[in-house]
Structures are given as structure tokens and as C-alpha cells.
Image 1 (cartoon, rainbow, N blue to C red):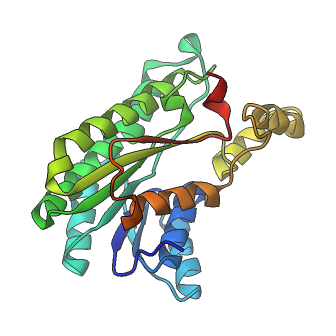
Image 2 (image 1 turned 45 degrees about the horizontal axis):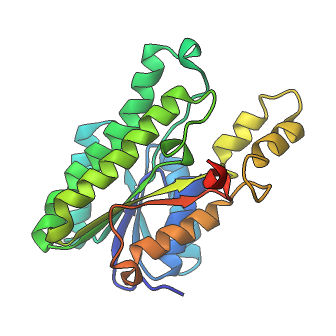
Length: 255
């Protein structure tokens, strides 16, 4: 198993879904995990699951769309541990709709979290990484940041931006000890997807339709994404930066 022994990490949107899975897998790999989320209840539940398994974690309240919150979170982390080794920008939201079904405020809402949120959090923590001359940033993008997806105009727009941000940031700081990568999952069985399925007249059929998008014929699981994040976070991936890591069950293979 890859080790994150003595690594200080922070995961945004870690109250549920992929973020919670990443936080728990990192803790199992012996990292100290700052669990951040806008929802304090769910964030503390993730911390409790980690500590119940003898892992190390603490909660940090964080709304990534609020620049002041991000600066305050960075101050809290650096006061507590004096450094941050690994930052996982996982927090994100979705929207279903074509151009004609998407309002300007819908796009603004997604941009504020999915793009500006990563900008805000990274801007707050990057100076410390530059001072320590080391750091590892992992952004959660999407298959919708690499190929177009029907009825996901706003979502794809923001996730393509995350891929571009990742590549630019990686190039800017590659010689300063900072690695930056992003993960591009296909459809994953998360609470967000589960809630979306309930909106369909036949949730089981909707699930099968979504699952069939992947060549493997199923959706991914949060733990599968989390273990990819673990690889990118550990020293064994030291030669990887600026990549968009596809974990899509073969979705993009025929594109």
C-alpha cells in the first residue's frame, strides 16, 4: 500500500462522496487529514469515521467560493501543523442542461465553486508550499473536462477550465517543487448521482443508461477514485505533473 506517513493533507468537499473517500483512504495511508466542507455535520462525520479507525483528522469549515474562508482555513492549518504537503481540490457542483436550459446565473454558480473555488483554495495554500519548496496539488475535474457531454454545458465549461488551470499551474511551478495534477472521473456512484437518479420516473433504467456510458458497463465507486488520488499524492508518482488522469471505465476510449 502506498504510504503518506507524516504527510499533512487537506481535502475540500470531504463531507461525502469522492471527497470523503479520499480523506478516508489518505488517513488509512497514515496521512494527517484536514477534512474541509461547507457542511459541518457531514464533515465531522467523515472525521469521526477516520478517528474511529485510529486515523488522524480534524475538521476545517470551508466554503471554497468564499475567498476569505479560504484564507482563514490556510491560517488554521499553518497554525496547527506549520505546513501542508498535499491539497486535494475536490469540492464541486453540477448542473444539467443545454445552452437554452442554462441561465447565466447557473453558469456563474458553477464557476464560483468549480473554478474560482479551486483558484481561491490554491491561492491561499500555495505561498506556504512555495516557501517549503514542496507541495502536491490534486484537482478533481471530470471526463466532462476532456470530452463534451450532452446536457452538461455549464458543467463541462467549468471542468474544461479545471484541466487548463491544472496544466498551467503545473508548468508555472514545476521547478519550485510543486506538482499539480487533476483526476477526470467518469460517472461515479455518489450521493449527488443518487439524488439525481431519484428525479427520473424509472430510477433503475436511468442508472443503467448512465452506467452504459462507460465501456465497463458500470459506474465507478468513490474508493476507486480515492486510490488514484492516493497514487498521485505519494512519492511513487514523483515524475507525474500536469496530467489529466482519466478514470472513466473506458468512456473516452472511443472518442
